[in-house]
Length: 327
Image (cartoon, rainbow, N blue to C red; front, side, top):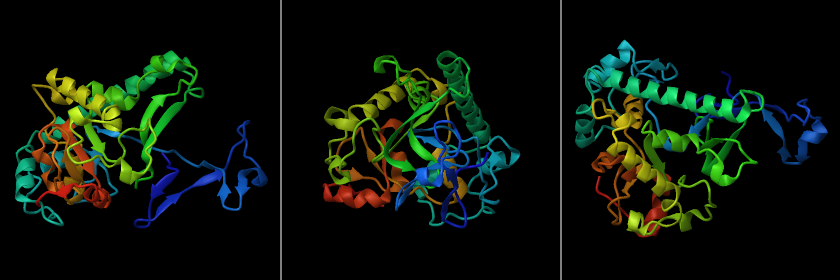
């Protein structure tokens, strides 16, 4: 499907739009669309993808490191089966920069002949579940009227990623329903059912409260553990962490005792790109004042205890008293 915002020509981000549509659905005039000398109202010409915040579901398809990066291959294919049997085979492109020995051993211990089939099974389960959730909302809230169906997006700090996708929590739109009776976001439902891994990336933690100054939003060292949680940590983040622990204890979804998810979707992505992970990580369950380097994320055992911090924000954390862990 055509995208309204996409990346092309290297790193240049490009979007396509029409003159805004009026209440009748027809194109507005140029005079109506032009708000002032530096603002114009447009209607995206194409589709806008929405990447769910705070969760990460298994990948359905990704480029292989041996092929073009715009050719997505299904994870259950023979090519991915071969690749994940030994993702460090000598014939494969090297990592640039190299993987740390500890991270390489961590991945190698989870890869193998069944890794692709394992990932595909969990990916299809998450995809089917989301389809069923949306279809149920469409039928029960909008009487299967596709034209009437509306999504409600709740954004956090970053509204769009580098792939032209909106970043947010997405719900069925129920503006006239009391808040307590509205259906949960699809993000939350996938996490509650154990179909997604938690993927907490600062500062996109809680879209339901104003962020304010980024510098002021940095948690003090030792203040991110549950007993010290405040603000976003105590609300959306802590609720999500509790849901993950419950799903794991009940062996739901990716925590299935007989067939748990072997490789995280983020791990497949960096294996595909042949680039090590780039986000630093804080242990939410440990407290302390140390931010672990990107390649040491696996040292934090529980997924819900990992809070990722992009490299560009590390100086803000250092100003607040955090220290970089040894590489």
